[in-house]
Image (cartoon, rainbow, N blue to C red; front, side, top):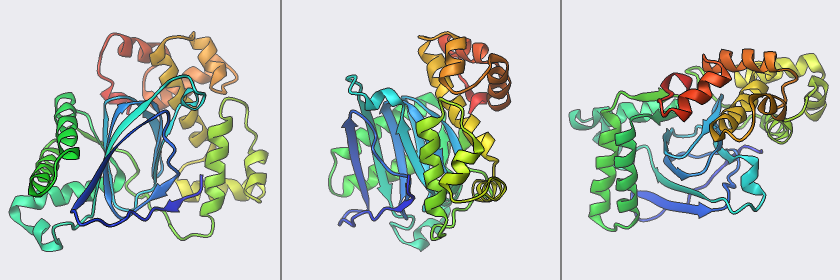
Length: 295
């Protein structure tokens, strides 16, 4: 998962919008200067934003800040030709697409603050707002000319006045984008995504990074603001959440399919990250309750 600086081709519009409908998401771990608003209409998997790891599902609306590394990766079954499909709407625009002075005005200061908050990645939780933004994105995708600018400003205004948000990456997170070690950390990320279902030894990822175990642990924590064991558990728990929602496997089966060696450890790690037990998490979803405290 090499960290790439994506060069988005300039257009003669103040924004770019497109709809991706395909079997699976195939983006790399990347960043770009443009802010990016993502609505997931279909699909599920794991979301990586800076030092954040979590599960994503249909109906998610996220604003990614300028130069914030990110990746949405589907669950394994999307890559196995099972007839599944993803559907995402993606809106991209420059931080100062109307000029720096424009966002200093009293009328637009909330949008400027929205952009600043997006540096950590923002999730919008209000169901009615998400549906409204989805419809506006669909409309914007078919609109040309000045009308498109008005729709874009309407979207940004609506997002800027809601308080029902969640910030993903930690406030102190900053990726040294030109660091020579970026290739090393990305190899570790990809290795974990490919192997989280089994026991992973520290010696394996240390060797992959051409480091001893202790130097690797220091390196990983410095770059991600968390121990390797925590990152591994976040990936495993993220996948477990998806399996719990699907309700096709028992909790015991989910435990071992996500790489945990005991149900006791699985329950402990799950509750540590999600504040409830796996069974209660599943019950809340099946009963239609909101999981605002789980993010």
